[in-house]
Amino acid sequence: MIVNIDLKREIDNSYKIHIGELSKMELSGKKVAIVTNPKVAGLHLQKLLSRVVADEVYIITIPDGEEFKNMDTVNSILENLFNHKFNRKSMLIGLGGGVVGDITGFTASLYQRGIDFIQVPTTLLSQVDASVGGKTGVNNRFGKNLVGAFHQPKAVYIDSDFLQTLPEREFGAGFAELVKMAVIFDREFFQWLSDNDLRDNRENLEYAIKRSVELKAEVVSRDEREGGLRASLNYGHTFGHVVENETGYSTYLHGEAVAIGMAMANRVAVQIGLMSIDEERMVQELLESYNLPISYSIPNLENFYQKFFLDKKSLNNSIKFIIPKGIGDFEFREDLSKESLLEALASF
Image: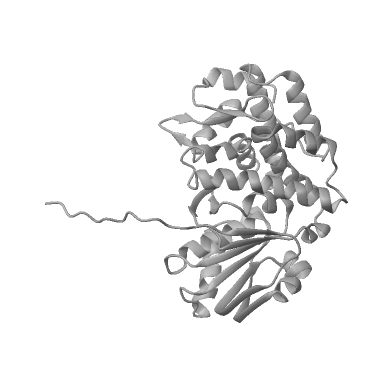
């Protein structure tokens, strides 16, 4: 006998991304927990509190750093929510960079099988990438973001004023994600980034954020759960995640590892004839103009190669690589041989 359970339905996960001065959040009737870390709280918590209107507001601080992006931190947040008797109509707000946003979203997806959350990103990297698209998760000893869920926020609030306190290195890490979007989708935007400095120019900065978010929003709206097109956003990440894993997530900021990963992907692209040496140089120069690393000493090529298979995009012992096709386009490649990859990576 067979019993069918018909679950076909349309679910509207649409939400708005607010770019500009942080606006009021009308959350009357809700318990709200703001998840942040001590450093961000000291800089920006009071501004956020002045914009949140809710029945009860709790502050949950978590340790700062990629090494704390794990289930222990998630469990500590869950304990807080249970202790304060949060219910399914309650809400979380993630105030911080990509680590805070990922952990907040993932915890929201778990609590009582899913509650709403809002992203308030405070780093350039999280504003242009991590806060948009609903990817949430944590790391474990096998790799980065291997435990997670797709859980879309109810809204994202991007205020470039938060970036005034951002260290130069963190700003550069975020810039790497802007370059990523430009190289795979928009040659004109790449040229604009090459011609315009985002430092100390709010108008340029907000345009760059807006354009990057527009590009990502278009991709996510067409492929929410990374069934195809959205995997293109992992340009630089397949290589970069291995770099992060090998260095214990402590040597490079995520955007720095992505910059190295892009340099590696570009080297492969040149080797197989998809990118010219001049185009490779143009990308390198743009990354270096924001003090991003583009070199890495691989300790063991075979070990580096084997770590690709811990990637979420691996399937049936093959890896889907996102390889730039010049500047402004890309190709998915699952046919790259081990020999060709090792040859390209030998220079690292």
